[in-house]
Length: 394
Image 1: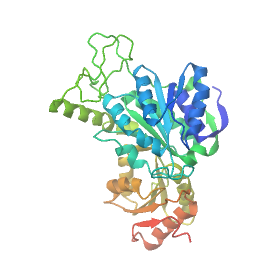
Image 2 (image 1 turned 180 degrees about the horizontal axis):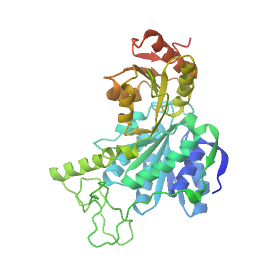
Image 3 (image 1 turned 30 degrees about the vertical axis):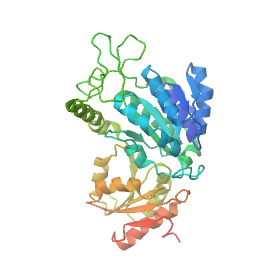
Image 4 (image 1 turned 30 degrees about the horizontal axis):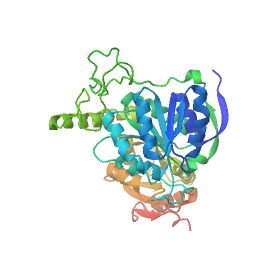
């Protein structure tokens, strides 16, 4: 099958991945640095019989895509940190009501308005814990432009398969950088479509599949009786205040993700088989980390890179295996240590975890990560366990 080779921006690749997955409804509010996604959806969706709506704000945006998804359409919105904060209540609603949607969050400096045109990676914990209540979530983190296409496509597949909101977490650098991307032939793409019931007779919208814990989902307007509410509800969707109903629902929502971690989680690595110093990095920080690891390797230091493509749920099993022989784990990220907290939880009993935070709106330089690796190599892993980016490179 013929393939297309294009010079693409990360935001453009996200849009292409969404369209390839079957996106037919986009609602959003323009916000730097994600605006190109909205612009491209406005241009391309009408050509496919889809719908683009510019909403009054981000709250309306996520509410609109929830409604569109309930009618059977694949739906998405895109935003950045401040807008993502506004979406949290409806994100929790979609989680409890099991509505598949995709949210692309192109991160920027914060809190508040921050530095709109500067990169950051400080929405890691907001993506996982931004809503109130207990529920699992799926968060994917592209590390280059091609992965913006691949992981946005995968985000739709996971959302449809598990009836959950899925977040694609990029940043200003990944969103705006350009690379040559080889796109697959559209005929070779087989998007996953949600499982639907065969008949309205006896349909229960929240009766879980016995194998995966994911209920069948009928589209609104197709003759199925279906009540959707943000209250705790039984298998018919009827509100319930019973403790046993609430307990069963919450545990099922958690289990349908946590019991399928092996299917959901992805990571890539280099030099992990024998590394004594591992670097855990995601997104644009991982590009500099890879360069630093390769340089250290050439100089005889056993360094390796662990790059999670799925941040939530985190690929904990794979990282624990690395921690069995890595004396030190360095975590460079454009925040003050959000991903490092998860790395400490998983591997802190086996390896020393060094936080390498950067919060000045600048991308990591390879020499900054290299300096951290060599500093740990020189002291044999007995350093202080945290550092500011650039300290060792001066």
